Image 1 (cartoon, one colour):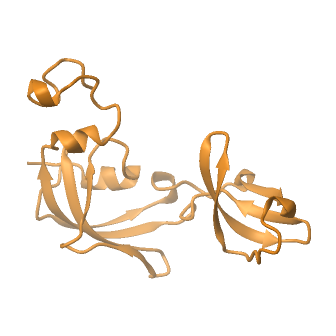
Image 2 (tube, rainbow, N blue to C red):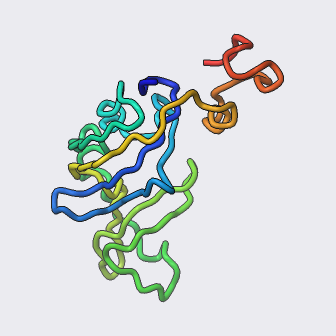
Length: 171
């Protein structure tokens, strides 16, 4: 079976930056699995493995625009120091998660001033070229549970009707 939309894919990979630093890695015993075409991975990774089969090995270089985008200056904002817990030792590079009206947001401290903290809301890998070494371990139809985990993928009681796609209400 070839990798295509709505297939379950399991990969073993090593991810490096231009510097050669390994920043993420799986093992064949603990691979990364996802539903292809469901927006669970970056565009460049999907583009690079489309049509591949279990057992294929490949190396991909993914530019920032097909990964996490270029770092944007408008996503660096000043936050009053008073918004942080009193006495907290805030240092550049520290990651934070805060609640916003739209849910949790993550940022990294870029700079600390007396009364302001410069917060970077870019993805930590924005602006980075990513280098993947990948082995495709498995390609198959996703299970009902895997499709259901996408949230909103099915709008009916598909399990009692024989699986996703049988009721006509699934995308």
